[in-house]
Amino acid sequence: MIDFTKLNDEELLQLQKDVNDYVSDKRIEEPNFHLHNSIQVQDSSYVNPDTLIPTLEFKISVNKENLQDFRTLWENYYNKKRQFFGYHRSLPPEKQVTVDIKHAIERKFTDYLDTVFPVIHYG
Image 1 (cartoon, one colour):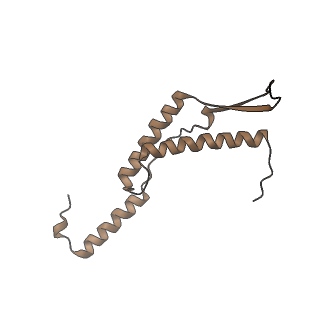
Image 2 (cartoon, helix red, strand yellow):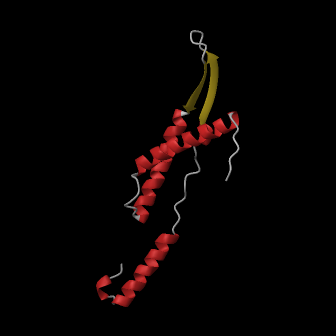
Image 3 (cartoon, helix red, strand yellow):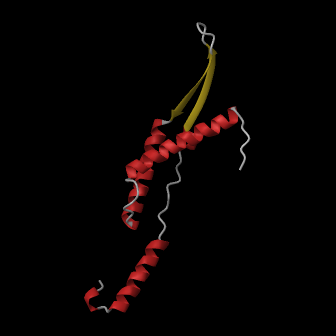
């Protein structure tokens, strides 16, 4: 254990720099588990016999077990990251995982719509 009271200012600054460099270089391994393949999008179309209006319905389904696994793995990852790096201005881990799930579903649905209704994207 280092006795900080016996170190002069220059030694303390050097020690702080070494610790900051170590923390910034530390990599916490991300879980290799994503929801993209667990999300299914299906469509059906029909004509309403009363109004004769054509209707297109989309059904988005997510495997519940994979969703729970994703939540557990990524919440643990965000907890470790938050504890180690001390992020105070980030979302709490459980909320960050919920945002990730929402974005994964949105991405999958957008990809599906791009295949059903191809659009030219100008960049």
